[in-house]
Image (tube, rainbow, N blue to C red):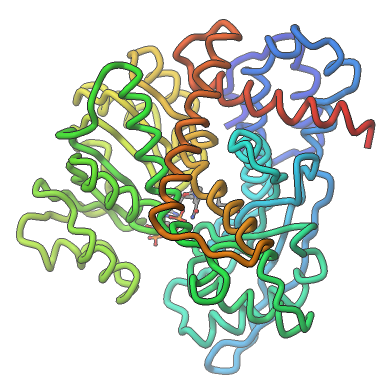
Length: 452
Ligand code: NDP
Ligand code: 2IT
């Protein structure tokens, strides 16, 4: 990916060259750093003290990286060894905060790109949370509950010593949902003999979890689309929405689209996608993916209005709004061109970095409203911060109050990105806006706290 990235201004190029040299073979990390560096040049020009204090040079180097062995046995008694990791990127605004991903593709490049994004996303939420990410190359697909439990316990056997409500607070991400969070939290509690609610978010609502955390990322991504469209004088109601993925983010993006009167017509997984012109049935999708843990084709098999398209991505279906909610680089330039030809008006990234740089550029050149993940999917981690507040105060807020807070936070994230884009000379460019607004908050705090 690195060789296709556009040249950077001389102000930030040396930092990028060092990142590439020091982190060879980490293309996703290079991609994420490149996007931020390309955006923040006007902030550096306006704040020479940021340059003098080496803010950027320090930010691209994680505060700490932990890599560890995770040995576990499957149901046949056979031994497996996976790799676990946690990258604690920045704690300048609060404890490290970010999810854990269990997927066979997980490597240091992916965890570093996610951790780096998380710093600015978390800053944008306005909550006191730093940035981090972790995970393992373990694949939960096809594993029994008992195997997943043993893996989670083995993973926590090492990770626990690096966590804590004031230190580092994980949550879910790909492959880490309610089941995994339960096993991970349980093992932490057993090892430490502490029911420390605030050390993990996304917990079950009966044991310290917050209302709306499950729904927050998908809901938030749709709220962000609604905000972008509203700014352009358009109403989300009646619009056709294309969604990729069929996990936590996708399911609740689809649910919120229905509630706002939009028509979500696609969902996908790594085997292909389904299209349903009557609107994706959320209950059926949840049954297929969350209860049966089946492939997406089972949705089409159970729904006469739906059709399964094997081995393809949903971007060939014409829609007004696209909410990519599966994984990084899942929507490339050709996909963007297909969406543009189909009349797409807005893209709100539910996933982290799902659109390639060339796809982002194609959308922006075509005048499509483009909400980057670090703004559009910030509702998940923002609601995690609300969960941490509730845990600290031993309170539990209602669903209605929590959703109202989420909506307000998404409006604030949108406003912060929108106004920073104007201030820094790129009106309407939410990529520049989100990066500049997030970076400013982090940089001011780093400046105040000295060279550490
Ligand atoms: P889930 O594990 O719940 O769902 C992931 C979905 O994406 C599944 O349908 C999965 O299909 C699909 N998918 C994953 N990897 C690939 C791949 N390589 N190719 C095609 N499809 C793939 O994860 P989430 O919904 O939690 O996360 C989705 C995205 O949203 C990720 O980018 C994550 O980082 C981001 N995100 C998540 C947040 C959260 O709160 N959960 C918060 C902010 C961002 P299959 O089962 O076939 O692999
Ligand atoms: O990418 C993300 O923001 C998440 N996976 C959620 C992180 C969190 O701590 O809630």
